[in-house]
Image (cartoon, rainbow, N blue to C red):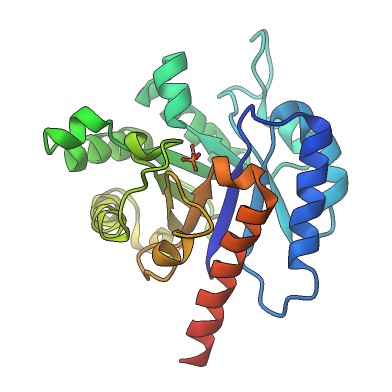
Length: 259
Ligand code: PGA
């Protein structure tokens, strides 16, 4: 299976989000093979988008979630509120939140534990800056992030956890990593996780690549066995691009079925 997740960020309002969601469903209509597709609108659009995707094959994700279920936390969104909205997936520790809003590894860890406990499918983002890569520190940085987040984490059997490797220098820049870069890092991530997570849970960890994925380069990432899917920002709010990305996933899945 391959997974395609659209992170619509703060780029579209409710009306456009509803139109995009309809476009996604339309693009998948009548397809015999379906990738796992999840859309993550802004929190203000979740309830309207839910009406479109409900009872469909497309999952609904949030872009962030607080680590408490309820309380006096002005501006935050809780697991309870998201559950009520039919949200199943939640992006945690996106680099924009880490870099612009000061989210730390510890905060992401708290959010991760809470998301697991509340039955969500977390999508944990990790990745190095350009400077860190230039210094050759990318593996060390990502390993530190993974250790900080996954320490003492337990989750129910069959609950899936996504890790999205998103090198910060590739996000929104039009310069993606190469599939080889992604494969190398995904292998590292799996190695680190194998020391932190019991064997039975390992099959339920999926690793996505994110960072300037578009209709042209998606196939190159998705065809790699090490890449379980893609997390798409900019190209996910352009329906023609997103369609191409979903088609690439379908092509890869169908290719596997023929083997
Ligand atoms: P991008 O963003 O596809 O626009 O590079 C990816 C992300 O931030 O998840």
